[in-house]
Image 1 (cartoon, rainbow, N blue to C red):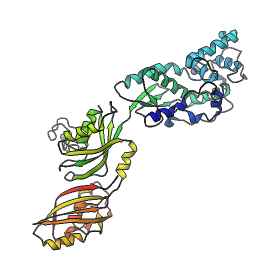
Image 2 (image 1 turned 90 degrees about the vertical axis):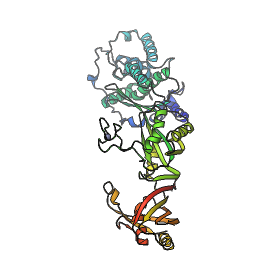
Image 3 (image 1 turned 180 degrees about the vertical axis):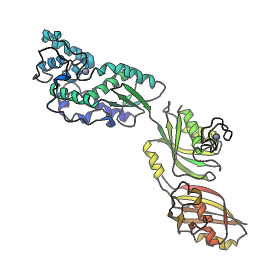
Image 4 (image 1 turned 120 degrees about the vertical axis):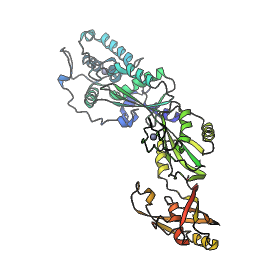
Length: 475
Ligand SMILES: [Zn+2]
Ligand SMILES: [Zn+2]
């Protein structure tokens, strides 16, 4: 976070003396504006003047005045009604103060050079900003108020200015402002940031991955505050069967909950899920609104997940607390889930890891146990099952998932088979196979939709008893 803070230093007003140097450098690249709100800063048209834009009554305006910081240029900008903020912003002269105070100093200086200037009647509305800077305090009040419950250290701004306002401001500034004057949008953002900094300690303004995103519509003065989610990466082991990976809405009430007898108002088909066993302690600890769970693949409700566990990313939405001790959190999750789920390797993560975790296709190791109708000849069964090591399966979309997956035939390799055990009429073995292999179907053949299968090679009907994920070979 410190690094991000340092980045924005470059966007600050240049030191005295660097003013013109800075002005001639490519100004745009040094701006602190969030990329998503950068509008097409169109090349200003040379023909900028449209007399109707100004409610000017006097006859002393010199339209051919040189640009600021020439005294005549400053006088001109005053005559067309620039506010103190804009006067300072495009005046191109260094004074002891910034913002409106700096503009007031420039104005006083100009008045002392030309006493007639004080008598010129100027319009109420600044033609550059339409008095936008008057709203800064009001906007900052709202930002401070709506973020007061939240812990944060970085903030990003998105400002929307009406396009015609940007264009007319740009024309005036380009013609009459000092070279390299700050455009309205970034000056406005700077004013807001300065006021925030003076009221809240330790905030860095960033261009990417903020804790809090503020969007402001300058036309309606609508201010939106978005507390960005936090992401935690980890691996989980599911040590008990009967727990779904994510929340399942109640079938009877479709998750609504209220007055539902079937789920007793919880809205859930199953009271527990891996998502909530992990997510709830985190949500409580970070005082968040909710969580989303992103696993590296899924396992069925009746399948355990052992070994080093399945990678996941937990998304924590609307957290009021952004810092917590992950070791303590690990202990908390593990003790609250009383042996049903265990997490390890927790670390802070980012949104982009969600897609990485979801898209990673890694080999997995399983152990599966099934029953046959009669006690088989152990040696024959062991040999037959071992013969499947290294084969490429053809698997049609299983019946049990066909309502949510498109029907197609996949080829999946069984990398290896080991530890085949025959105990009476129950048989168990371990295997490692490609991501996306339907392992139960490999055993019972899904009515011939998986070829070859254990059922086929041993010539007996197989009924799967249980399945464990032994390891996910990733990361
Ligand atoms: Zn202004
Ligand atoms: Zn229900």
